Image (cartoon, rainbow, N blue to C red; front, side, top):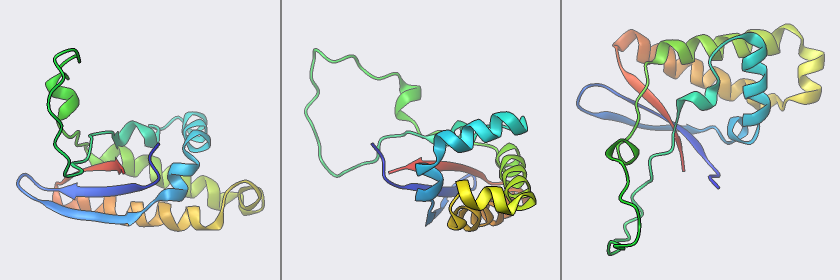
Length: 135
């Protein structure tokens, strides 16, 4: 299981690198997805890229294993607009009922969501794609 969730933004040629760790969002993935469903916005997990990271290890191919579909071995990049809508809806909802949200959600979650909002806003303004990378 992945322990870290990172946002990566790229333009047509290059990646801007990985942003801050969003491990609280990852830890609360199921609850956040349920909240997204109630708010009728895309789930944050819809934007996860489960692309396997290069660990530096090279394994010889096993002829008995199914060869992966090319689409499974390529990174998946997303339009940031729907994700920005989701993040803004989550922040608005959590901030509109602070007493209830503080009991269920860690305070640092809003900080992570605000960080996502800033990164996604910049990605939208620059016409870039993004992905939430599990590592």
